[in-house]
Image (cartoon, rainbow, N blue to C red; front, top):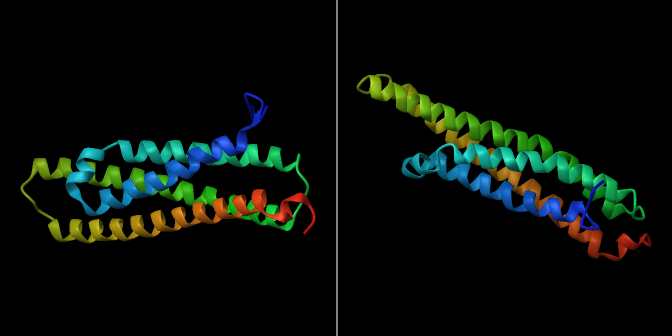
Length: 164
């Protein structure tokens, strides 16, 4: 079931995660600090974050299927542990992307209805959103890098042959 054209699905699905998570993270950060980019990106940011989030458990399940077919090793175990930690970060990235989009969309609608009342509170919230966006995007991207590095080590190190 976890094969695509006879190949293990895990390495193929992982590439979607490796591309989409950093892309979504970049979109979230840029959207939080650059209003013109935020307006152009619009709903695309949470959509990319959602698609990335969907690929994370798919890659994880395919990885668990592949894990049952290869010899156990310490580097593979480390990769599996790190892979388990990515899903909460991907959820967080999606929540931040969707929350950011919703916040700025509602704020723009309110601004259209009145002429700028309540700006101080809006600025504080905008700064808070930017800080949270940067932290979550950075941590999620770092987690992808850690998982990817450990996966590469599991595949390419001598430890993957079971002789570690």
